[in-house]
Image 1 (spheres, rainbow, N blue to C red):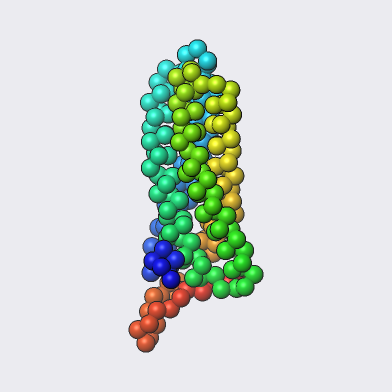
Image 2: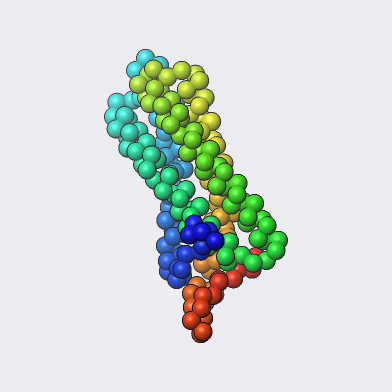
Length: 186
């Protein structure tokens, strides 16, 4: 098992902090999508975005440039292995594995489509965007909202169950000095 597939050795506070960071990022990304679409919908073809909105959009895009990628990494490389180690029930494990596989695939698609969406957003903000640019932005925002909803229904739900379980599941060493895998039943 490589390092990215091994669960983190987190105590319950560390797991709660990771989940809090992920859920906070979900809320911020949803606000980013809403704000971006609203500002770009207000942009007129001749003048671009309303006065003062350019700095706001640039700030949102910079956040997305960095934080969305970090967020995907936290989910794929930190939280997913922890959940895989914790979920042992056969039915729950297959549901979780399917969801985590889909989420990782969507991360790749969203990361790949972001540069074109950003370019379209920039063109629209300058008043130089086309109907195709507007459609690309709305498609990206819609895809990202659907992705966040999937994560909330699966990844976040499983993680919340894990952190609300008996704190002893986060014990990393048993009495013989070995490692104990946390167990969560759906």
